[in-house]
Image 1 (cartoon, rainbow, N blue to C red):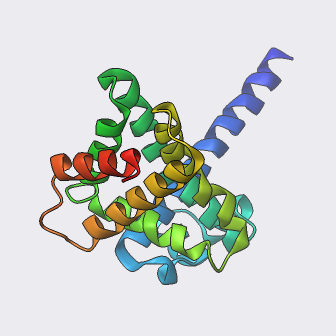
Image 2 (cartoon, rainbow, N blue to C red):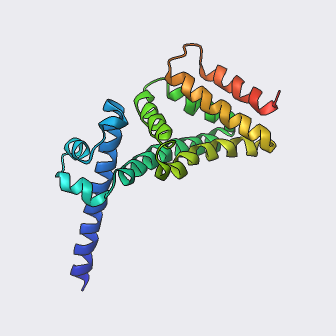
Image 3 (tube, rainbow, N blue to C red):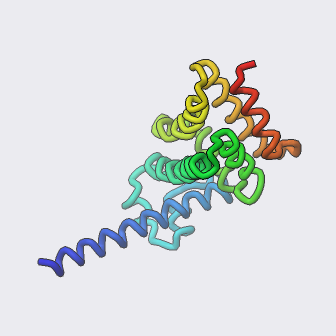
Length: 187
């Protein structure tokens, strides 16, 4: 019986690795070609797996896109949580995450942004798209902000993310921190 359990666990582990490879490939396709370039076939080709594998693990395009957005969002949420705990300053940590989207993390941030915007048209993506905004809202709530200020802070962070992806040169980490702190004051 132990041999059977090991075979099943081995297959399960291989299946999970394949699923993760397909998700990573989806994000690479979005980074390179945008959401319009995502098809089961294109993702399978990028992952170097049979096209049937992409369909097996992700029956619909929404399933595939939700998994990709979840992976991208989890990365940013984890970064924010790590920076908040290690730096002790939540606003500066958020500013650091936003600023990273203007550098070497730009392609992934752009892919995540495009997937987030797609949520306006694809309801299946909406709960995942809200997760980042919820994490940003928690930063403001942790600073004792009232509901209106929390919404203002989240909107400011969202706007800063868009500006940095559009290539605004004046958005340094210090400037982002200053803008977020201003939003927290509510003035």
